Image 1 (cartoon, one colour):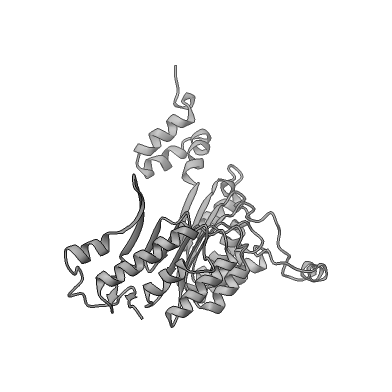
Image 2 (cartoon, rainbow, N blue to C red):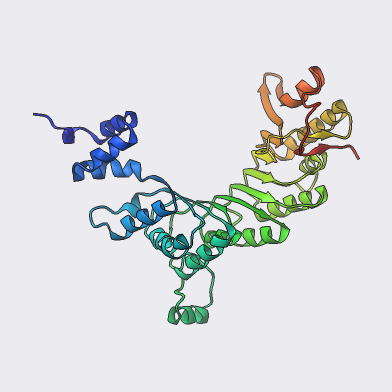
Length: 350
């Protein structure tokens, strides 16, 4: 007689893919075989909020049947506005983080007021790999704040933070390749964040940035390029700027982001630009900028300014930059003529 436990694990995964989540959880409660089989898939990506975070942490810290911490590859924790979570949930979640030895991506989303405390708990538990002198390490070892351990989160590669930028100290002395900060930064706080990161390893950077002028934005982009020379994807959410100034910087010397594949500015907002110069003229100017930029940025294939999307197309006659937005604006007429609201950027020939 054949039993379900005789089936290959791959077939069990296929069955679970078509079954409701509640049924899979029920099946896991039937025996340890199904618990171990489905836990690998169920706990590889975890997204918890508030009380569920506390329950997960207790399972990780107290379970003697299964090492749940080592099953988690991607972890998302969302804080809640409650003093109970502040003093009960957060310390437990941080303790559980120290058990997630196979974690590759962490996402932390919480209010700024709670993020400050969460950051202090992570620092106290030694999750921040600060570079200390030998004498300072002796002092930390004898105090209530233990020195960091290189065994905490050894495989972490991607960090996403929405709250206190200080939580990005997790990147210190780690091989982080993707970094996202949804909290608004200025040039000073961005400099701190990049100082905590090994810029030579960083391949993707997504930030929300406060700038007052297009010149400041361009200068910050030069600074990012110097700190992160191997970056392949850059995404910046910011205020109003002149898109022609940015495209000119991409085509000028010194070369910025020589290995970049995509550069997106205000892409998430999906807002139209405002034209201070004729559309035909701004189209030709930016097209010339991008064609020149391709000479020094051979991997660049996509540039976005809000809804203005430039893509490099490959054909028999060679490569050519194309923009669906400009095609419609020039050949079909203005698409956002009666739009009222904020704009993603401006196109102004100065």
